[in-house]
Length: 350
Image (cartoon, rainbow, N blue to C red):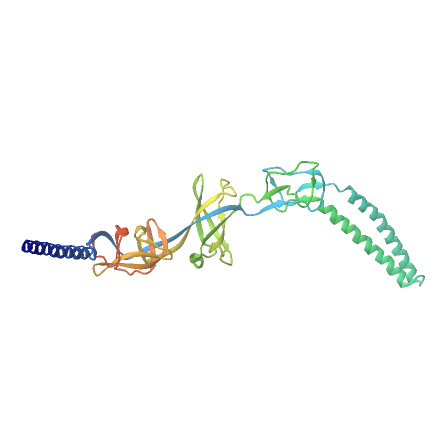
């Protein structure tokens, strides 16, 4: 009986030992499988120099060459109104007249006083010649004339402030008041805009600021207008906008036939010249990161992750300014499944 138990125990021990060895081999095999990569087959792109026409697309807005909100210089009741909405006015045309009868009365009151003071000055001048009066008395008469003339000039200036005239040739917009209204310097009665001539304001990224110069020609299109317009760069702002890191540019629109309206949105295309040795790669090859951009390059038959810097974008291609050299082959498909040091082969290279 004891002998039978001993034989049974020995058999169980041998079976357990065999199972342990089999499990160790299976675990080792599984571990070996995880530590090795299968060869990945992807499509590639051969990096080589190409000619790049550097073009920047920006958003802009059309503005009239001159635009002024019209405000009266003094307060009062409007007695005459000449603001033809949508019509052209000439420089100096009277647009608005404010009640000024009180000022006119002051001017009429001062006119005879001035005449009398001039007569008095003439008489005292004759007496001064024969020593009939002192020099001081004569000087006071002259001072009285100068004082009256200054007061009359001040009244005339105040009368001029009751008139609002066109500052330049332009078109009047919609008026905001009616005849008889009481206005003040804070009242915007209408807006005048220069007729025909337009300017185009747009901004470009900071990295292109050194490439733009006054005299350059830009093209633009507007919503609902199939014709492409052109404008000449007049000036740029002398500083970069801190919050957007853009440079503000102003250009003068050429050949406006009246189909462009101020305030319209414009898509601006600015040509910055040609680069004959630019490195261009497909945009889908770039992997955006939190602070930089990467591409996968095949080196020694394995995947290498390379940090790159990009430049101009053009029709599905991106310029690489740093990180790659001519002759590198990069992956353009399956990049989400690639990892550094994985074996990689190309099924097709463009």
